[in-house]
Image (cartoon, rainbow, N blue to C red):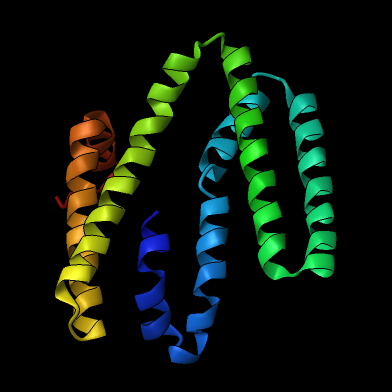
Length: 178
């Protein structure tokens, strides 16, 4: 979500003004990939539970679908191809969630309670960053620095509030000086 919001200033700063026309494509690709983290978690979950056959089948369907989106790219253009790719990714993402729900005997309520907070944090931080950029409207470097600083601080604060055990686990991974 944050990359979707910051794509225009990031492209301006990192790649230059000549790349601004590619921002909508980048935003669509970021939106298409939003459920990829769920895909990875579900793949690992099913493989760990001995369900690699299911994983193989879904990945085969996904790869075949990706080939089909190449035909959409070739026939209708890049914009429509990226939209087809996004629809494919979201469909596969929900398929993975369904399979994880079925394998773990979870209710949809429990499953969504684990997914929605992470998406919510991203959406909140993105809205905050977008509004800051809209209000500031200063030099692009200063604007981007302020947006990133406030965005990272807000993201860490929300993570601490929503997932307090995650922060404790991260702190335990950081080596302490003796």
